[in-house]
Structure formats: structure tokens, C-alpha cells
Length: 380
Image 1 (cartoon, rainbow, N blue to C red):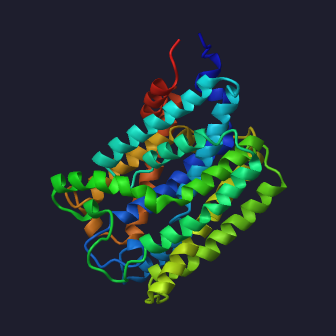
Image 2 (cartoon, rainbow, N blue to C red):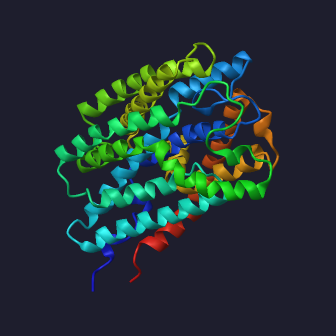
């Protein structure tokens, strides 16, 4: 009989600050990115963001496109790969360790299917579940092979991004995520499973980020950042900004891009540079965590608590957005502009941080995390 002592979940005192702090802080970017998808009832522009006319909304849309869109999810994917290595290292020589990772990934896929069907078809949990199943086969692969695969995967990422998001500027109808603009809840419910199955095609960049995360996890770079991490913290966000700014200017109406070839090239550059930006954000937070050390104030403790309960907080965001923004509920998505929507997204994220901190003080884990752990780890 295999011992399960090394397969138990990580306790509160055993957790590293950097991954939790990164998840907690970057959930704000996830909220901003996801909330923009709920806006409807107006012509759609680049990457299906609504076309706006008021200057505050245009500036907000441009900034969100430049610094958030396509940048947050790659960072989470890198943390996902990093975390899989930590789980694997605890039972590297035990086949049960691989089975735990597979079981965890399969349950993530189930969680994603439920979330995508009932709430938000742009769900990422299912994508990470598929990603986890693939990574289970790559945990023994050499570092050089991992990095080669990560680099080679950028080619299909660029091609898919150029094709998926090459819709004409100013279209009246949505070209994906149709359920978010449908007034009948039953019709939206029927559309969401179809959209959820299509979501991985638009998020192919997470594969490269996760492979780099596995490579970084082997070196524990988030815990002990070195010169490479310091360079990544500078050049990653710089590359993300450089590649995202043109599309941000287009989204804000400050730059025109009418030719299909130009739109495709901008989308490819936007998504590929977003991977570098997401990895750079993770490196930057690793350096901040190293500087903080054990001097954790109330804000750091709350953000870390949110990161430890990131799945619960992520699902809570969807509940709020569906209730407030969807056309078959309160319907604010048909009236709010980008500036107000970003304020709503940040407020929602801040509320989840406060909720996570209350759970931490009460010694309560996130409900979603608790359920996933019970389903993943074998009982004695």
C-alpha cells in the first residue's frame, strides 16, 4: 500500500509567498480582462472590444488592451506549471504522484465544464485541466527540450491569434462568446457549452507560459530569484508593452488598422508579446516578494490569502459579472463604458480580497480549493 504522507496538501505555514502574492494581485487583471467581454449592444472593434467615443473610455480601453489583455492568463499558466513541479517534487519517485497530478487535472476539467456551462464560457479552469494532463507527460523531459517546445509553440500561437481575432472593425454582431449578448437565459445556456469547447483555441499561448513555468519551477526561481529573474522583470513587461501598445491604440480609436493583413499581424504580435509580459509580471512579483521577506503587512497578507483561494475568488468574479452585466440579468453590460467597467472589475476583485482575508483569519480554506483537494488527494 502506497503511503500518502508525501501527497497531502501543502499546509498554510509551508506555502511560499511569491506564487500566492502573484495569484492574488493578478486576479485584478483577470477581472479587468473578463469584464470587458461582457460589454455588448454596440459595434465591436479589434479583438471584439466595443467601439467607444468618450475619451475616458477610449483611454481606459487602450490601457487595458496594452497592459492586461492577453497578459494575465499566461502569467497564471506559468504559475500553474510552476505549481505542478512543486507537487511532483514531493513524490518524484512514486507513481502515485503522477496519478495525483492527473486526477487533479481531470477534476479541473470538470470544474471548468461546470463553470463554463453555468456562468462564463471563457472559463480557464478547463484549459488548465487539459494543460495539466499534457504536462504530466513532460515532467521528466529535459530542460532543453522544454524550452525548445515552448519556443516552437509560439508559431501556432501566432497563427491562431492572427486568424481567430481577424474580424472586421465595426461589426454589429459578436463573432464569439455569443451567449454574453443574448437576452434569453435558456438560449445563452445552450450556447455556453459550445463556446467553452472553443475557448482553448483562443488561449493557446498558455502552453508556452506553462512550459516555462515548469522549467522555472525546477529551479525554484520565484522563491530564490536570480539575475535571470531580474532581467525578466524588466524586459518581459517592456516586450509586453511594446507588442500590446499598437493594438491598444487601435482599440482606443487612436490608430487605424483597416487592412486584414495589418490586423492579423497586430494580433499575432499582441498575443506573443503578452506571453513575455505575463512572465515578466511573475518575475517582478517574485522580486517584490523577496524584498518583503517576512515583513508582511495587512495588504500583503490579504493578497496572499486571495492567492491561496484564487479559484474561489475567480469563480466569485463570474457570479458578480453574470449578475450585473449579462443581458438576461441586470444588464449593465449594455450601458457601461470601459472606464466604469474597469472600476466595477477592480471593486469586485477588492471585495474578493477582503473575503479571502476574512476566511484566512477564520482559518477557512476556499470552498472550491477544499473540494478540489478532497477529490484530488487519496484518503488514508
